Image 1 (cartoon, rainbow, N blue to C red):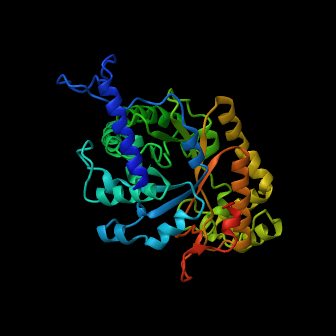
Image 2: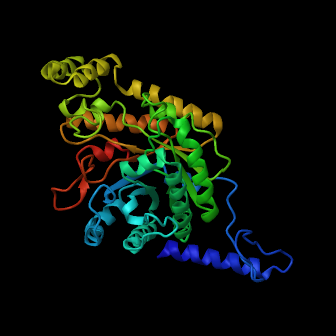
Image 3: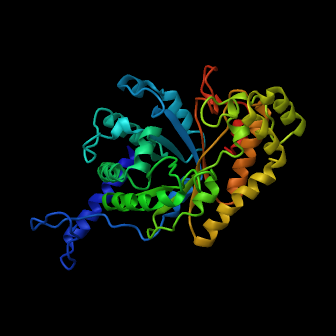
Length: 399
């Protein structure tokens, strides 16, 4: 309760000061009716507080809770135990990213009305972490079909903008030092330039209802229709006229390694097993020859993996463009998803990659968040009696 009490006391002091200063005019929201009484509002910040930047340096994704799973009241309440909360509290992460899909909060046909069935559970989860001195990133993380409608239907996109106004107003009750608002997880418009004007309109709506909260804006997953380059896409993002913004992208390169064995997405992945990092040409060619022409996507992907010579130097070279863009434009940039699918990936290679990509991001002054806590990309051991990191992971993440 410490953080929530501090926030409430701060607001009361602001109100007392503003209302008690007869020489000052009342701050009035011009879009709201004024019945003659003084209306105190929170003003937008003229800079991004360093304290918030610091909390975004090391984060943890909590997936399969309010998204990526069947949503039920029982499931939401029982997803994590007190042991999980204590572990996270003492793990060294500055924030958790809570993915929330549309069925938890969005009312189809009435976007200005937030769905309330699960809202108190979400609110309690946010406040629980804040009380533990862990910041929370609210990640609007809708399903693929929902995102398709956003990208292809301007009327639907405008409806979601109205939703964000209602959602931001609701979330504005939480301490802005500890709650961040992320616009949209992994937008995948045909061209990055198609997404950014939509995002800018949503940001203005969010800012109107949450003037002091930091907003996380998202780079498109692809630069153009056939160029799935999230790095190139994020550095093409227009700089918004709002200082309280953090720019975000995801980084899973090379996909052949980080998603090997995956049964979704790129068809090459399902037949890749045991691929090593850093690149080992003999290992990659063995996988290529084993698969043969039964999956030509896998076949050619192994050639590309070797030719691109994936190692730490390659990771640094790829991420350097983001670091330079951020430095040149005086921006705060984070990468709030990075990780390796823990299914058929060699353990030593997984640990080495996580260490290398974490160090490469930090060298560019880019905060990061690991995907994820305890599912397919897990970093903890659920088999032991106590919650603990998998061997080697804590050191790899510099925690």
